[in-house]
Amino acid sequence: TYLDVSVDKDKAVNEIIDGYDAAAVPDNLVADRLDSAAYSLALQIEKDATTELESSATTFGDTTALDKDTIYDTIVDVRTKMSEAYVPNDNRRFLLVSPTVFGLILKSPEFIRATTLGDSVVQTGAAGRIAGFNVFEDATLSATTDFIAGHPDWCTRVNEWSVPVHLQDINGSGKYIGASAVQGRRIYAHKVTKAKTLYIKKNAGG
Image 1 (cartoon, rainbow, N blue to C red):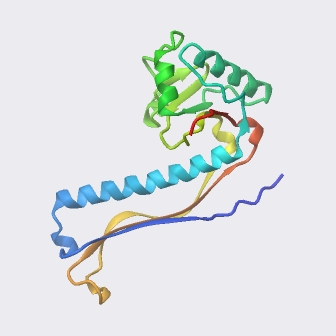
Image 2 (image 1 turned 135 degrees about the vertical axis):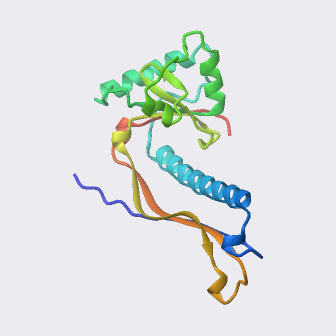
Image 3 (image 1 turned 120 degrees about the horizontal axis):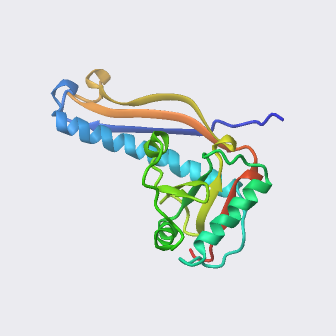
C-alpha cells in the first residue's frame, strides 16, 4: 500500500544581529544565538511530530488517572496490546511520557532505572527502560496525554530539504548596514503509517 505524504512544514529562523559585520560579531554572541536558534527550530519540529502522533494514535484504555501503584501495570498492558498487533519487540519500542507520568514511573516500586544503556539509546536521550520500552520524558505532549507507546518503523519523519542554522552576512542586502543574521530553514513532514501500532493513553485533565 502506498501512502501520500504532504510535505507541509516549512519552518525557519531569521534573527538579525544589527550593527555587526558577520566577521566582527563576538564569538560568544555567535555561539549563544546559533545554539538558541538551533534549539528553537528543533523544538518546533518535535512539537509538530507530537501533534501527528497524538492525532493519529489509537486510544488505549480510559481516562482514569494514573498513580505510582498503577503506572507499571498500565505500561505492561500496552506492551501486551502492541505484541498482539505484531509490533516487533526488538528494543526499539518507545514510550513518550509526560513529566507528571515520568515522575510516577520514578516512584513506582517496580521501576528499576537502567544502569547501563546502549550508546544509541544514550545518544537519543532515553531515561531508562521499562517493560521493553525505551522511556523518554516528553514535555511537548498535550495536557491530556499521559503517554504514547509506539515503534519507529511506523512513525516517519520526511526531511525534504534544509539549510543548517548558520551566521549569514547581510551587509550587501541594501537594507541592513553592517549587519548579520542567524538563519536556518527546514522543510519536512511527519506521518504515522499504521495507527494500530501506536497507542495513546489520555487523561481527563487539561
